[in-house]
Length: 123
Figure 1 (spheres, rainbow, N blue to C red):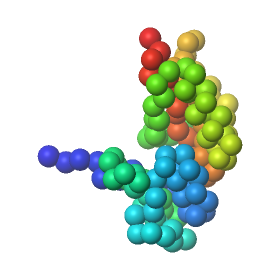
Figure 2: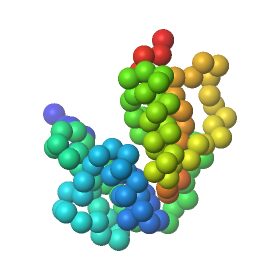
Figure 3: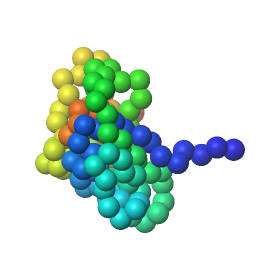
Figure 4: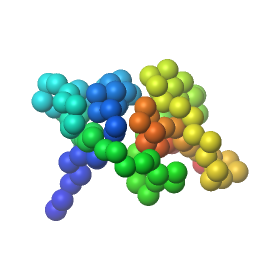
């Protein structure tokens, strides 16, 4: 049986991306430091998959096939987390595929990688 070990994102600036995702998720560098071309961040408490960041020059996809969903307990927590992530450097994405009553907010990290913050109490 396989398990997810790491999720890999491309980044033009690995150190900047590592700073964002460390702040966003409370993750720490697995090897104690962040290299300029590759790093793996892991949960500080050791539980959960790692997030690897690799140097990449490929363009960010407008509608990525793979992305992260970050869960918030309810609408208030979702709003607080979105504000916190924006303060860390994320930006709102002008998403053209929102349904009428979305349970998610689309953001982009400091590298432009899209991710969603989900209100898990929604319908």
